[in-house]
Amino acid sequence: MVAFFGETWGVDGLSLSPDGSRGAFANIDSNRFFIFDTDDGNYVAFPGPTSVDQTRFAGPAKVAAWSRYYQVVSIYNSQTGEFVGDLPGLAWSASFDTIGKFGIGSEVPWTTLIVWDVNSLTKLGTYTFGGWQGGFGSDISDDGRYISTGRSPGGWGVWRNPHFGIIGTPNAFSIFRGGLISGSLASLVNDDDSRLTVRPGPVFVNTQSPIHVIVDSTVPIGPVSSLRMLLDGRAASTSIEQRIEFYDFIAGAYQTVDLRQATTADSLAVANAGANPGRFVQAVTGKVRSRIRYKATGPIFQYPWTIGIDYVSWRLDR
Image (cartoon, rainbow, N blue to C red; front, side, top):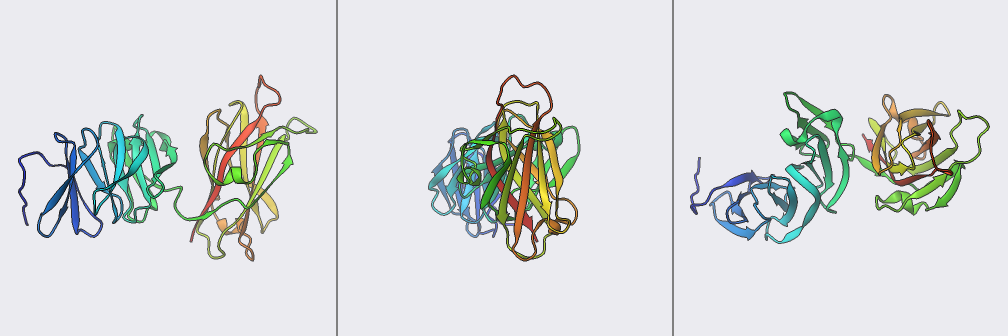
């Protein structure tokens, strides 16, 4: 063991870089964080966030510093200490993969977990994981594929990171039933509050869905171990059912993979293909197709009611 001694202040939130060559720690009394060389213990101090008491390396080139009492997580260059930017949201804990792509943090309430893109400093999604409490210990695997979090009292769970994998973005869409109010293909590509807004069209019977939006993409050809689609959107009422279907290129028919009530605020739905996901990818072209249907399931005191789709993408694992 090698022990390093320096100042008389406390050492909080100690962390090591993925390759072990550098370390970082914080001092809550001076609002500073420190980066040191693990060979000789030499360190450099940098100004950090208010009440900073936590550090964690976010890949080889970045280090995060924050206060665990639900404060903004700030990202710095781990070589120079230069401020890079803040991650959105207020977090108690934060963890990062060793690549520097994904980060996770627990947000108020403790049952809510944020997934960040560290490179773009954006929030990719917020998840409850059925009441599991990210504030009581959470972590992400080195490659970013899995998320683990604990809960109180007792227990822990592991989930696949819904944002991990090969990304397919929309390259075409059509409205089979319903009427376009605003938006375009570009509205579906980025999670930026620019929505594809659609109103109901005529139906023959009330059991039919008056809105059908079909979205296509192309993913690389090859083996498929899992396939999921992410959809961020909202509707005029919670009395509207949202159904996501994947097109089965072998059976030549749509299969329902996710069914839920819509929300009036933007929310992220993750639709998993389940068993035998390769049937939803066209073998020769790599094409994937999803149909999103909406229908009223109760009284809606607005007509025409509308739905808005802000973002659609696919994640594929080999």
